[in-house]
Length: 225
Image (cartoon, rainbow, N blue to C red; front, top):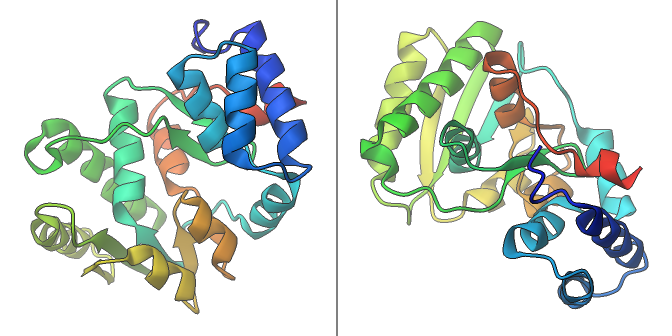
């Protein structure tokens, strides 16, 4: 746990922020109020913004969350999962939100396709899926991201090599496709996707990291307790 981030003042701000959020105050407004009141730095404000949600949304997400990938049809927000895994490999800060999903602090992962860290992230992801044997895997990639077509081909090759049924598809707005998906399990940590899909949801990035590392992350839900 980062002692320079998870301070006593941060915990006070966290609880004030959650209290006001549960009373439907505007998120931007209360982030500024609590951030200024407790003199939070940029990373601390990001943790509040990306990791704390109102109780209504949290209960809805927890109700839909499943923890097993094996024997399921998985529809995966590819960059969402891969960037989270890669940011962990790079030593960047990850944390558990109060909805129990792992997130990073929003750093944009640069030059992914030529980077050995990104290659390692893909390897960990596909190896985990091969180990768990879902009945089908479909990755969805954002077409505006450079060289998504190349990554889609690579993912298809790795799925075939691992003996998994599946595909990798490119679209301008994968979130919309995931939200409208009518079967299987949706894999993402994006708030809009989690709240608007009617299907079960899965935190694949967390499962991959827990399977490969001794994962010790700040848990904002526990800090609220």
